[in-house]
Image (cartoon, rainbow, N blue to C red; front, top):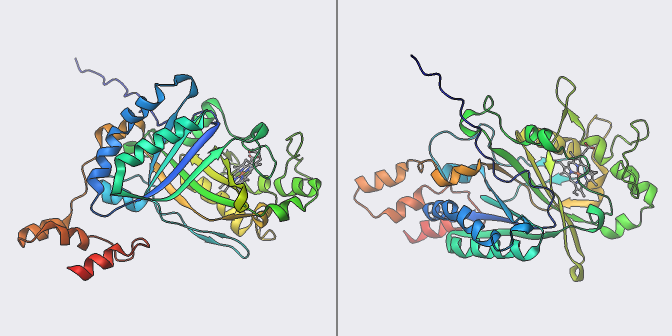
Amino acid sequence: PRQVPEPRPAPEPQPVLEPPARAAVFLVVTVRHGAEQQVRDVLENLPGLQRSVAFRAPEDRLSGVTGIGSEAWDRLYGGPRPAELHPFRELNGARHRAVATPGDLLFHIRARRMDLCFELARQLLTQLGDAVTVVDETHGFKYFDERDLLGFVDGSENPTGEAAGTAVLIGPDEDPDFTGGSYVVVQKYLHDMAAWEALPTDEQERVIGRSKSTNIEMPDDVKPADSHVALNTVTDADGEEQKIVRDNMPFGTIGRGEFGTYFIGYARTPSVIEQMLQNMFLGEPPSVTHDRILDFSTAVTGNLFFVPPAGFFDDQPDPPDQPGAAAAEQADVAVAPAAAATEPATHGSLGIGSLKGASS
Ligand code: HEM
């Protein structure tokens, strides 16, 4: 008799659905050309590294999520690629700009205590050594009552339970090779606190679309169309609200006057977050030019990453074929110039490619 195959269990996701953390380290790094294999090896060991640190304080919920950028994906892996992975799309609004900045890998490290986050980040970067360059490192904390540094409670409208999974995890009928994966967008925002604090509270509330003290959303007929909440309430063609999962963190350096929000949003398709960004930076409807939160908040980074399911790093796809390397072998020359030849001429700001070119 023919055996009916058992339905395969859904792959375990990375801990993207952790409850909001108390502390976080956000690391965005670029991968040195030629160091791809070294990075693959470290990523394979990462779950073990995380266990080593987490096990010392299990009640404090250390978790780490690793995201891979579009260009890095093609350097690290051959075979199928996540259907919607592409570089972060810069937006140039009439007044404000969502910049795209370099970033091959994201490590989103969370816990109830900063020491655990710090230790995992330190061990991880020690192992990665000179294979990567840290392009941004932000240490975030939770402020009173889950407030951001603008003083508003941040995160209330996050979906929870099953709705959160539906919002952020790729389903089997969407991208079968990457079921259980997710996409993540990060942007580091710096606030103009002097300008913000000069606004009376009722005006600040009209910027956000919620009450500052009670955290209650304004009724639709009162909420301004250019408020943050109005512009981030997006629906699909059937009128169904499209949700994302955020775990923004305040950060800052008081002596330098630096006060910020590190925005992080997960979704099962980047298009939902991109729609929100378009609404914020380009405005919607046309009478609205931008989200007023941007008059007090400047995005200084912007990246999109794919977050593979948890088991991905134990059994990573083969590396891509390297036509440059094969050609070099045939021509019986050393491999190093071939690695330089596969480097996109425009990559990065370090100019390593041109240096290599000059010396060969
Ligand atoms: C809602 C703060 C950037 C998406 C909110 C709320 C606050 C807030 C206070 C209301 C409470 C709640 O969390 O539901 C901020 C700050 C930001 C920022 C300080 C950076 C300066 C972003 C960005 C996006 C975004 C870049 C999307 C790309 C959302 C969404 C909601 C929200 C989807 C919920 C809307 C709703 O359903 O009511 N944000 N946010 N936020 N924000 Fe942001």
